[in-house]
Image 1: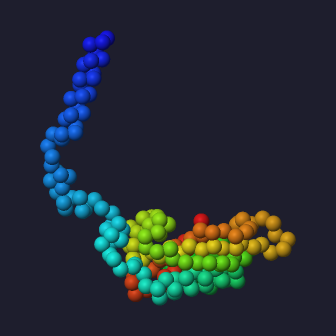
Image 2: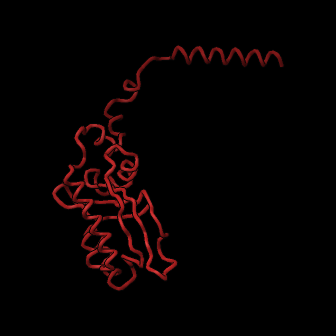
Image 3: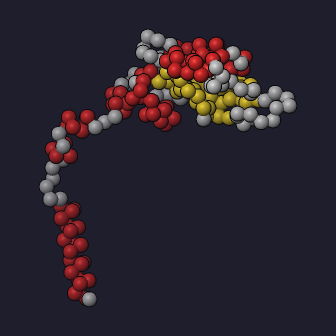
Length: 191
């Protein structure tokens, strides 16, 4: 038993020395050609790393915020036509028949007030998370996630509904546009 223990110690010692000295000191780029490494990087990461300019101008952010506020105002007015004008046209077209026949409800009994709303920046973890989820579908330059604090209220006498009542931070509006020359619309919203 003692011999087995000594052999194991010698084996691990030799293995450690080989590991520390390295068998062949080739770099990763010598083993894997550079173009293969570049191709493995996700598109959204490549855009964010190589582009020192912000993805969106202050004006683009401001107009996206206005559209999100108009969306909530239309929900508070309980007006499907106004709500649909603030939504990405492609999404409205997919749902229009279901909205018109009442299968899909665009508003409820609650009133929602936006207490604050902002774009957290290109490098914020929430922005990166949203971009990762939607980049393949829209392209990173066409997704602008806005984060808001909202206050949800029910009319007197209504106790239950589709939302919890109160103030909620981290409510997200996923604003999407078709291309650089088009407006941002609400694609989705929620926590």
